[in-house]
Image (cartoon, rainbow, N blue to C red; front, side):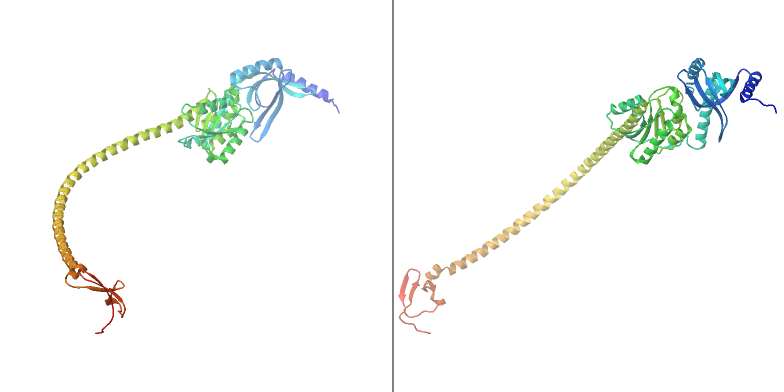
Length: 411
């Protein structure tokens, strides 16, 4: 039986590939792994995926000299670096090494394909969110009349966070805001999970806040890729409170912006929006107060006029009544005077009669009429027993007679 060594077999495969394959091919693949070594070479693993499995996989490399040019051109065209998780159109050459096996050498990359792929993926994400009812879900929540209790999702070290807090704290109207910051990673692969945890924490305490604010500072466009993720967009849409976003970019809205209740370009713009919301409420209250004061003044004026009119009527009626009362009072006084005079005269006659009676029984007058009184121990003898030997005093009109009882005749 004819046979060959493994090396001979691999050499045959290499020879056949070189003779039968074209110098290069344009291939669509997703980068599943990417790393750069210290010499500037780029090593990747490329895959083609189906929903539930990997259909194909191969190693690829870009040598340092080529990689510097490709990396710069791709970044400038797409606004994103070469990284794991994106689909790319590669121009590759096929290599087979007796020891290392099959691999691809990347000669060039067409960034236009990736731009189109990202646009397509973005449109598919938006369509899916719309079909599932998430695109308008958070927008249906009404903004609070007075947004003063704010749950802020951001990195506390971000410049945009500092700008937001400074704008909010130093507002010209000196409104007070209660803020609590939920720290999160705002770029990179950890963004979706980190913001998701912050939203879950806020949901448990949703009664303590009026709004959720998601803010970050400016940065490379690539830093915003996480904000186009379906999972993060779904979490924001389903938040229990209205969400305001200030991602800090000037390009088209991210999907996170699209599902938020209100999106603004920068963190400072978000702060101004919130301040204006409170200001609008204050102005409406102020205007209502002005209208209320005006209405009260008008009612008071009408009431004053009515009271004045009623006062004149009452004054006229009162004048008539007073005249009638005065006449009645004058008649009553006259009658009282007449009755009092008659009563006084009657009482005077009674007093005169009484005085005459008193004069009649006055002891002096009685004595003058020839009567006398005999006393024993200063008391009338009519009220006590008289015995022989008692000393008596007898008084009449002119004299006081002292005597001693020598004899008593009983009658």
